[in-house]
Image (cartoon, rainbow, N blue to C red):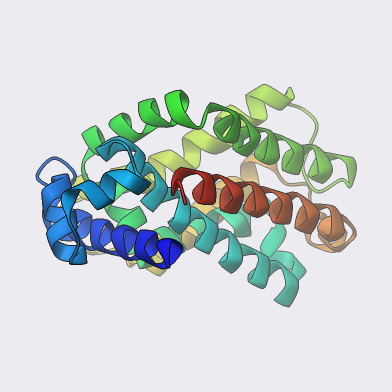
Length: 229
């Protein structure tokens, strides 16, 4: 029962985040939306930051499910270029992640700082997962080895973040979302992948699946811990 109640609180917080934005939402608002008392919210989430951080983690776990399903259906989706494209499109399909990543930059900053304070080991594990992913790709000849690991990770993150965060500043609709995703994939492909990457990625798939499944398990465990159930 308490776990169901915590999920109801998370549902309410996510709905209000999309409708009103992080700054306007209070714990009282979330409690009213969930049909419970304010004190009950604090039984599960002791601060507003922890509550919304858990909302974000739950969406990340759902995104990982989508990634894993795509990888299993077609190994080519595990290519860095296709992973970037899929990330871009899925972020825009998920209203909660979209409002956090591309909406209010203050919200992203607050949650990033809260994440470092409350789930620092999880954030390090997430970064390590991406780094390990690229190392697996390098070992299988999917990505070039002309960059140091940290340089490759920084460049990939910067490219993906740039494509995601520039959207709110666009004033035209000449390029569709799908076309922007294709452009991102082409940019990543030309920046990192080897000429025969598509033929090599299948051999890397088992390790990639293991990395992402482990990351999802860590997220689910942390979400359960933050619910204080």
